[in-house]
Length: 111
Image (tube, rainbow, N blue to C red; front, side):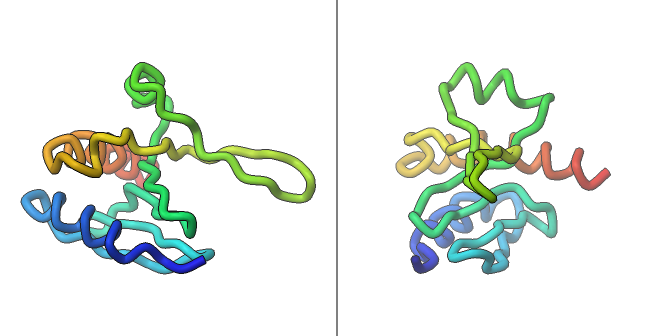
């Protein structure tokens, strides 16, 4: 699997009014940062996942955004990321709104 650079660029372009997006490659994908705060993952299959936590779970649940799950050592586990709603791919304002939930969760996790 290769990193979907177009998706990384789409996120960076949409988020540009709010700050600089950088990324670090990891496991076939990338972690995305806004001004140094992790807020999203782009997985090797080209999916976008925003950081989540207990404070933002209700918003993600209301939008029907699934949790990030992975298999490890024969078990399934999840981490605090939610699949981005489809509208973020076509609407920069929606991208910023949902991504900022991820930024807020990233800031809380770092604090």
